[in-house]
Length: 98
Image (cartoon, rainbow, N blue to C red; front, top):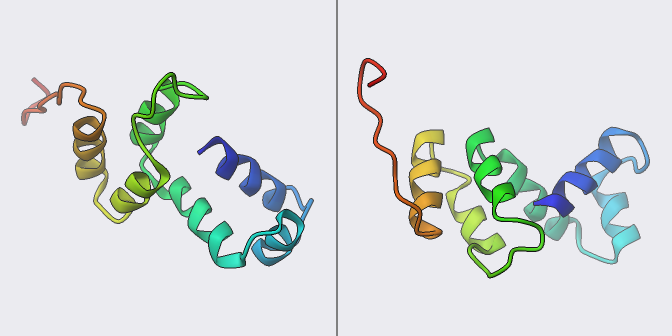
């Protein structure tokens, strides 16, 4: 995820004009760069959980493939799924905030 954030920053800051240019510079396909950047569509809470695992992780909790598989889910489902994947207790939320 850190790498995807660095790549996106290079695009945003104009260091490269496009994903295609970034891909050429890195020696990857544009599709591979796009796939890596898709991780940035995870909910803010999920990204926070993944960052809390460390960089590098002391053990492999989650892979890029696992993260990509949950990108399409609604935010609440993403959080439940990531907690399940890394085997952390799932906190239940109740209507009314309690």
